[in-house]
Image (cartoon, rainbow, N blue to C red):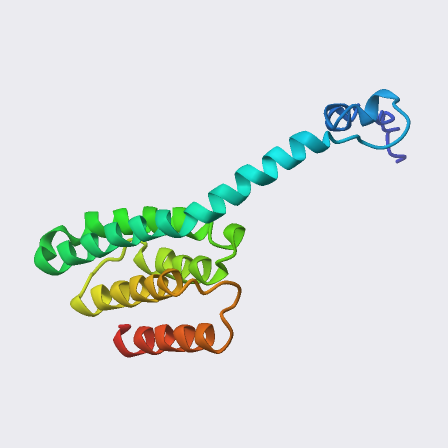
Length: 171
């Protein structure tokens, strides 16, 4: 017995307009040539960025002082550690996003590690609190000594020291 003829399948292709291109300085709207950037606006933005970069160490120092306070409270009130670790995680998240932007990638490295480590745990022990302190100490050293870039030998020593503390006190 012959198979019944199957109805043909219709396929439609839709080409959607790339609206992102339209939003990027008019490049998609038929303009010829490149993008012109107002040099005065660019210079003003650069000046603002430089001012922010000058203020960054002071801002981080304040954040570090707050982290030390949270650490102290972890030591003094173990029953509140879960909530304190949540606060530390949030602060570390903020710190990790900005260090490299302002020339302090070690702050980003240490804050990223702190953020990962302080993320909620089932059991927060005294050894975990010591690892938190080691992260804070490392960031404080970077800012106190204005260690920019990878920090060379000093940056490598700080990183090794933090790794040693983590391996010593980790579960």
